[in-house]
Length: 102
Image (tube, rainbow, N blue to C red):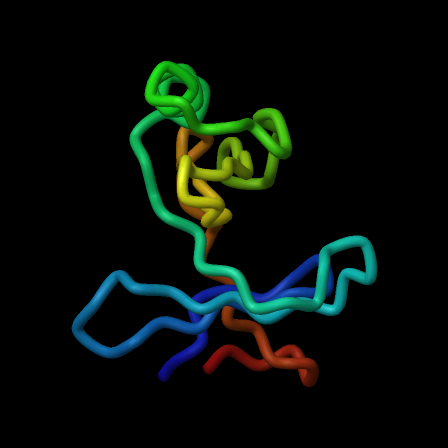
């Protein structure tokens, strides 16, 4: 894995030859359970679609750095976190703590 970006108490790591990203954070306001976020084109539209399919909205769409996020529960009780990138990907920021670029 390689750094993609760093900032705001979090770091984005990317797998080589992939756009798959793992985000590690130190935000005490975010639950500590591991959650997979599924990328959708538009969170607001996806929430409407899932509600029509009898999913329950646990957390309404809210703003995040790169777009919007929401949490839903499917008819089988499975929690799903959905995320869009409507504000664009985070800027590549690989500066180390010494001020040098990697």
